[in-house]
Picture 1 (cartoon, rainbow, N blue to C red):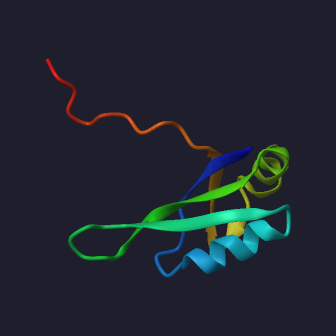
Picture 2 (picture 1 turned 60 degrees about the vertical axis):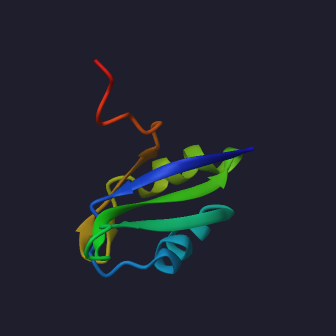
Picture 3 (picture 1 turned 60 degrees about the horizontal axis):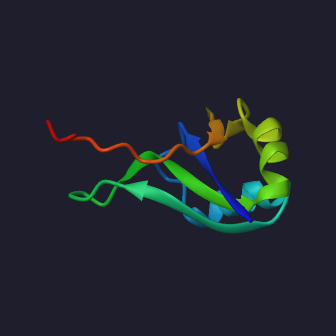
Length: 88
């Protein structure tokens, strides 16, 4: 089973491969992606890493609040996307 981790406050130049490499030190990384602005294609400063369920808690504990590329990152379990325009 896999879990998705949210990674926030990333440096703008971070690539998906950089993210995967950082997390691979703590377990198996199944997928990683950086979220980009639809119009400009530039990083929005956060991303997601899909990891094995058994590795997720250790990765959060090891990496949350640590320095990555000169910035202190936030790592936690991703929440389901909420609808920005709920029907009234």
